[in-house]
Image (cartoon, rainbow, N blue to C red; front, side, top):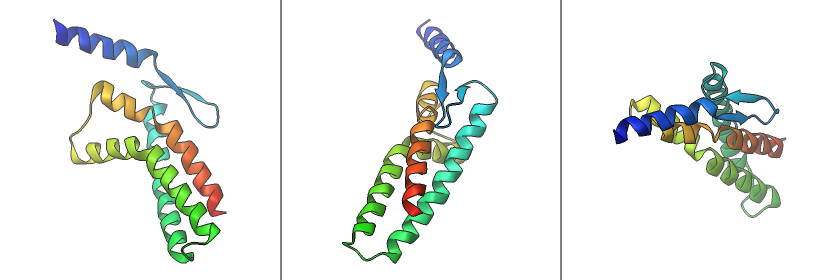
Length: 123
């Protein structure tokens, strides 16, 4: 009975959940557009994280620019940690499902925001 109730709660929670993207678009978690959004955020943050790493390597340690790039990288890695864990688990065919996966996927707007901030720092 408890498992059925937990499953029902997850379904109800997921059905009513939505996220707001950085652009202000409201996406229901169970919509067809939500997985595409999460995937695009994940791919862009990978691209920007790589660019940040290369830019940091090109800077002189201790310089103001170096510190700013490192701060942007830390913000990006922190904000995107849950999304990256979800992607790794999905790739490996294991990991969080149900509510745990939903909670991590709902972090996509935070990751998107940190990615945009990092991209601005690279300009």
